[in-house]
Image 1 (tube, rainbow, N blue to C red):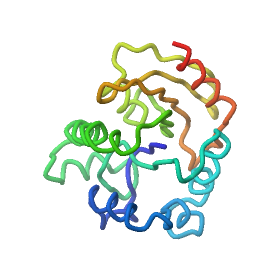
Image 2 (cartoon, rainbow, N blue to C red; image 1 turned 45 degrees about the vertical axis):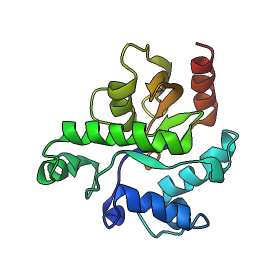
Image 3 (cartoon, rainbow, N blue to C red; image 1 turned 120 degrees about the horizontal axis):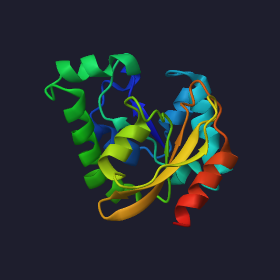
Length: 191
């Protein structure tokens, strides 16, 4: 499951320390803490908590990450946070985050499916960043174009591995539709 970027609730962690902490305490799930109201939108946390089961996965098999590995007050201020960091720009942040995803996250997770739960193709989003880094030349297959249910799929090639990606609306504001995700996933597997 890939969101756009971390919130200020995550600001005290580096990418490495977050991964190490998760391995050292596998019984503690940040999504579970969100369900308890310890960070952000409980709507988002509840959907992150229940969607894996609806797709045939367990939470223990699910890796939660963000496309951009830099925290900001909100998604709208990520560009400002990137410019204020040593990276200097949103573009460099996206490139470095995707490099980390390819070199570290992919090796740890070997995903069967990536759900990008911010899916604008016209503005920075988890889906557009993944597509720019790993999906170029792939056809984007729109399953549903409704304003609340927009869902599409493409196949990303990450570190030499082809992985289906399904883009859905952000779950802090919209309800995930497992049947649409299944359809997009199935269509990518048949390619």
